[in-house]
Each structure stands twice: as C-alpha cells, then as structure tokens.
Image (cartoon, rainbow, N blue to C red; front, side, top):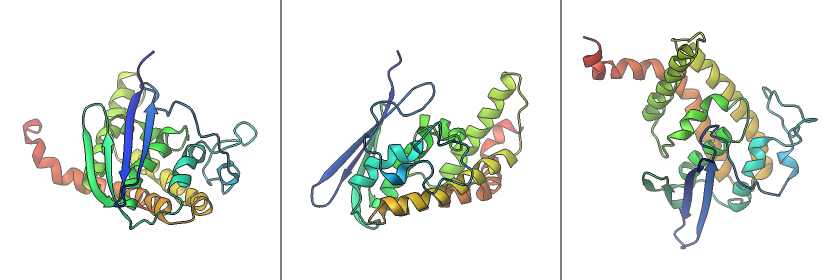
Length: 232
C-alpha cells in the first residue's frame, strides 16, 4: 500500500497557543484518508442548506462529505476572528512554508484542501491541484497552476483516446460550479461558526474562484513572451 501524502498545518498564535492539523491523502485518488471526526452536527447533514448544484442523494449519503471533514476546524476555530494574527507553518515532504498572516489567509488554503479532497463531485476537477499544494499562493500563481493543470488534463484525455478541449471554456464551466458551491456552502459555515474566521476564509477561496476564469486569458497573454523558445 502506498504511503499517503501528508500535509501538516500548524497555527501558532501570539499567546503561544498552537493548533495542528494533519491532512492525509491517498496518493492515487487524492482523497482524504484516516479517521473522520465522529461529531455529526445538524449543519453537516446533506439536506441542511444543500448546495443548489449538489448531485448527491441524502438517502445514500446522509452527510455532506465536505461538512463532515470540516467539523474539527469549525470547532477548533469557533471563537477566532478573521483579522487575528497567526504564524502558519505548512509542512510537506519536500519543504515547509511559513507565513505570519491573518487567520483568514492562513485558514483559507486548509479549507481548500478539505473542500477539494473530501469526495464532493463538484470539487473533483480541482483535485490535481492538491497533489502539489501551494499555500498562500497569489492570484497569478493560482491562475498559472490551474490553467497548467487543466491543459495537462486535456493532454491526458487525448492520450487516453478521449476528446480534449483546448480552450478555456471548460475551465470557466468548472469554476462556475465551484462558485455556486462556495456561495451555498457559506450558509452552512454561518450556522457552524460563532466567529468569522472560517466564513471569511471561505470568502477568500470564492474570490479566487471568481477571478481565475476572468484572469486566465490575461495571465496567458502576459506570460507568452516567457515561452519564446517554444514559439520560434
């Protein structure tokens, strides 16, 4: 059995209090593995503010897979303010990243992992991004990584004998569905959180979901000169 991918988020607050979260992902499916939180709050039920584009059926799956994996975060940060300062250290096998930042920015990429790797069908197309997780990424970095991932997917489709889609329309469709999910899932977060850290971390994720399709063409145009060796 392959060793799971491990991503560790450590939060260190000015009062020396620390919280640590270890994300384990199956190397092939990039799904979260390991024991799930045993808490099953009402806001985690699939039919509680179920996303408008959710294809899941409550008779087969009583709980929203994202919400089920989000219960620990909402519990641990239930009284944390988005503007609170924190030092976040993210550890992966190859390196670690550290940044002194706001809770909103520090929590947002962790939420991104959970939302993408929990088994939600709407978020499945974003899973390859988790394989090479980059915390604290700028919008330009996110656009570059997302478009590169998307076109890699089209290359692999072609290699598998499937029809590739070499425009950015497919990417825009993916993010349109993600935007709907983020908006609707926010209603769960409001019910689950007593403070605004988790909610505003989700808002930050949604800003990127809105901006990536809008900025993709511009970023590709801006970096075209960097590819001069391939365009001769």
